Image (tube, rainbow, N blue to C red; front, side, top):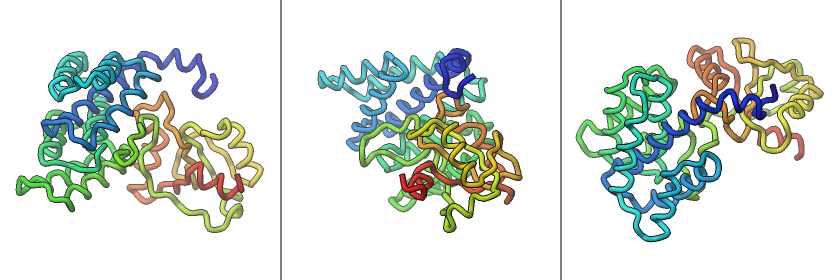
Length: 287
């Protein structure tokens, strides 16, 4: 079956619908967590809703856009939506809990500011579902929030630290641009290829995500022509994980799939591959 093809999409459709439903519910919950819709949250909220209307067909997202156009959008509208949607989420499902949590993190970080109530919300969600701590990066988010709320006041420096911890798990905040990043990827420490193409000659390479310029198979062929050995899965022998600019529709988490998770787990024990973005390779290839 073709990667991201129609047949594979049919197989994953139910799981994907549930994944994005939980994620968007968490996002709305995060936007509402401060007790109001903050000014910096409006543009990201609308961008997120437009993305869900066009690609996921979420009725609540459509209603938010209509309310905004009619100048009727209120904080209570969001909280009511979260309350109704939450009843449809199985609290015993680890994947649903994780995607809702990741959505919440994206909701509170979308304006690049973390309030005390937002940080406390993270701690409360983890307390209710401690298995969240098993996900890569969540322990760091938990610990930074714990430190930040110790004196019950989140300072600007503490807010920045929490934002950075969240960004490493769900990607950058888009508060400055108002652009949705639903199908983006989590942040990672990118390796700079100082000796290109020699760095790739004989190196084992794995690709993940959706590549925005050419199909993945074409990209693999180009890398193979440069001497890279293309592998399908991440292992301790993987030298480079090439990350496409867009998340795959069928990833387990909205912002991260099994290859990224495996690579990050290996990095924690010092055996992980180096991460390289699609864009760096395109620049080095002169494209």
